[in-house]
Length: 198
Image (cartoon, rainbow, N blue to C red; front, top):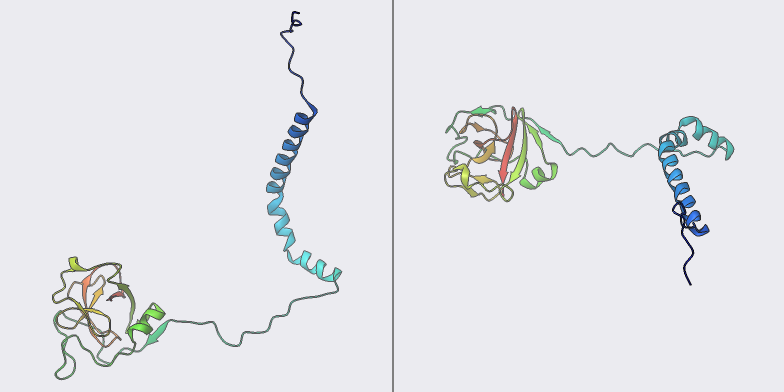
């Protein structure tokens, strides 16, 4: 038996299920687009002061009371006074006290652990921060007698701790870490000095 003729303008029948899926997809897209377009307005009114007051009035005037903090926020910045003879010296001019090595400047005001905990020490008009030799190895810095001293600072053969700054290389600075520092590297500007540590 021959098949019935097919009209050229005829299209396949659309089932009810496919119409339902199409309408559902269109409604979902409309809901997402509508909520995205209205989101800034709904968030702003949800937390506005007038809406909060209206909600408090409806629910019996409940409110959150805060008590003042017991102390001030934690501030880990350390500031100290520089020694009377503090400041920068010329290159190679490092002795302080009798019989001490050129880079040793007396008792440390801050241990390496205190320095690392705070991250920065403001002292003698300078801001001291640190960077580790593990992050930035220093064979290219050409530091004579480069070693890590007993307190954990990278030092030269004269005992000066290694600093980075924009002062001329070889410039010596007093530091609060028990050693004088000498500029061997670049990377900071102005009164900011980086201290090279273990």
